[in-house]
Image 1 (cartoon, helix red, strand yellow):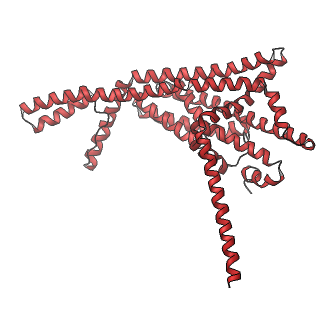
Image 2 (cartoon, rainbow, N blue to C red; image 1 turned 180 degrees about the horizontal axis):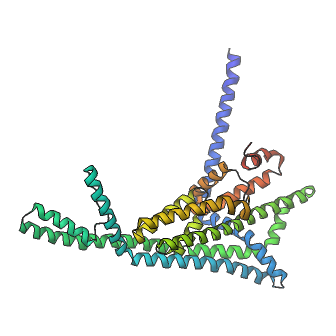
Image 3 (cartoon, rainbow, N blue to C red; image 1 turned 60 degrees about the vertical axis):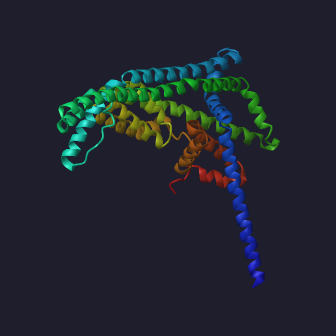
Length: 391
């Protein structure tokens, strides 16, 4: 009995020890990635962007431009594009800040209608979160107080209501303005990170052939051709992923811009571009982007018809993306199945935030490309991949 029990206990202890080591290793690995976010996240993003810009640099070199100038011009295109996007978003945030008092009054009126409907049909009363700073809302509160108070108390109540209006409305306006200003400052503050990424891209483009040869030196001599094939596949996947995403964002932005302009919402073109960019985040991006567009449409117009037009535009855009853009223009941008796509987005978001959402998906594709050519790792490549996913 003891002879049979001891080996079982030893196997159980060995299994628990291995499980503990695996979990601990993964925890320390991802915890280390999170701590090194400020260093590694821009570096990994620069690697992927450099792969996308390499054809531009090659084309310029083919036209007789020296390698340094070709790398600089390619990098400059990326930097000007990003700065232009940040400038447009910042201007729209500033415009929204200046228009907030009128938007707040409009939302207060709409919520007041909902409040009246709920009180008439259910007997429940709702507090209007937009009533502060709205003269109409304060007048209604004063009139209600006048029905239950004497004339002297009404006068005192009106004075307090006016004081609350001055302080409350101001605090609400200051609060919203401070939030929007914080968003704008963070957008412009992140330009330093963009500048660092730009510097990385320049040197990666300048020394890309050296990096290519350095990676091949890790490959045994009899596996050089296979190593070149793996590197070529990794670069091709990254380039296809990023170029495909650019096509997707451009096409969706055009569709959204047309629909949002018809709805009459404020800042239709900037909102369309923002929603298009958010579509880069699989599954979650479309939901968040759609919610933002609906909120902006209702806040800037106060008309439910505008909300329905925006909702219809989002539905049309999703149909075009799923049945036209993806199969015919973008194709299979990245060979990772939906399960590991979600895992890549979730892990990337937890470790590096928005940059992680963008970077981790192509990183999974790189892992798959390497695993497909290493016999010991082929099961991992098959598990991550999308080939035969419907089997």
